[in-house]
Image 1: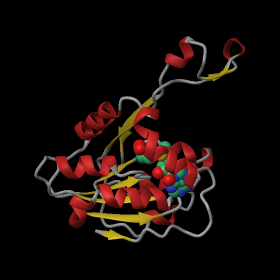
Image 2: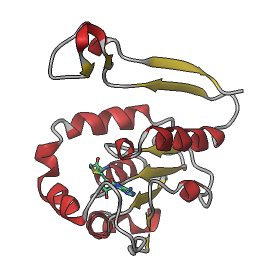
Image 3: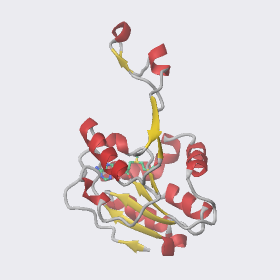
Image 4: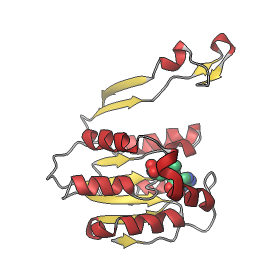
Length: 192
Ligand SMILES: C[S@@+](CC[C@H](N)C(=O)[O-])C[C@H]1O[C@@H](n2cnc3c(N)ncnc32)[C@H](O)[C@@H]1O
């Protein structure tokens, strides 16, 4: 396993090592339904179980999703990216049984250059990380990932809820239940 666990010097803008430690200890309680997230993502991976492919996880945290992919797809290779030293160390321990098929790399989510030095990637995965980017950061990241898609790829972009922008004087998506919150954005189409 290539595991250069030295993240860049400056601390992450929206995440601290204290938060990493708390997440390592209490993440299972903070994120209920992890098994459901895991099985949904595994079902969606566009590969047969014996097929070789490379996947990149953006913000791998403790490495549980990398481990699930590597276990379910014995020929797959993973690159796990994270900006927290604590997380990379924890992920290194969890992923030790798969050391020949996983590489852990430090990265900063806000710096799009991490996309450039990657091998040909079949799947980018991410769970509970991209919300750390602001609106323009998300737009830039999705544009970079979109540019890596082959022609004739069917793209689906969706979300887990709608958003209120002043309807009935409400903003956001809670705590009230409003029909607009149930209008989930969904857009799909083929790459040129
Ligand atoms: C809520 S945790 C989710 C971890 C994992 N994906 C999961 O589902 O358990 C957020 C992860 O994003 C990483 N992260 C947050 N901001 C980051 C940034 N600006 N650059 C790199 N990594 C960042 C944290 O170190 C942490 O591992």
